[in-house]
Length: 216
Image (cartoon, rainbow, N blue to C red; front, side, top):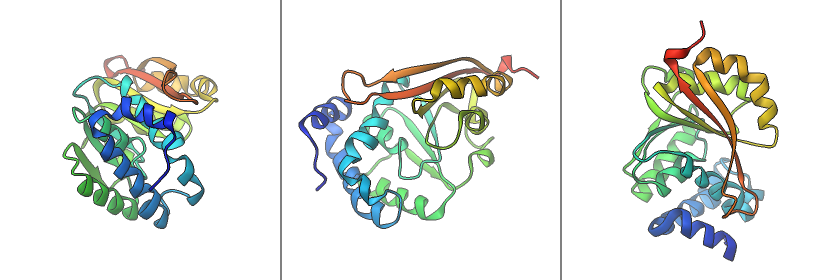
């Protein structure tokens, strides 16, 4: 079993509530088959809770009740499966192009009995027209200037992109500003989430989109 510190457990209890056992089972999948199949590096096992699961799960506070969320480049389910576990009111579509990752994701979804998750084996740009999301999430996919073009087209007429980023978030926003406006982004901001729960809070770039205001 993956060790969890008292502080991590407290944060996990607040985020996952009565679904904490599901989160623990997910972490065990990451530490075992996820590592064996190359979805998570073995050095990450001691910090699966802090650096990965909790780091992703805290963004649930930025997502409205009942939203359809598309997670681009889901990989090991970060943040997609974290959100599906923490928020059963959400409908998650996990978009992942690599077959071995898709197979693993489906095995985990089936084992955890998550009924609010759909997995699509495709690239984000090919999913346009097949997904009309309220919110699109991503973590460590690419620079924001490229990520905007992969995420915003998956939104319905209005919606939000919630991208987990690092310390360079502000700089990335500056570089991507023109692309974001062209695609219909009307407001872009850096948000810090999980300050009261995590030793290292999560930095999120939030893009509010209204496609009726796209710049030709």
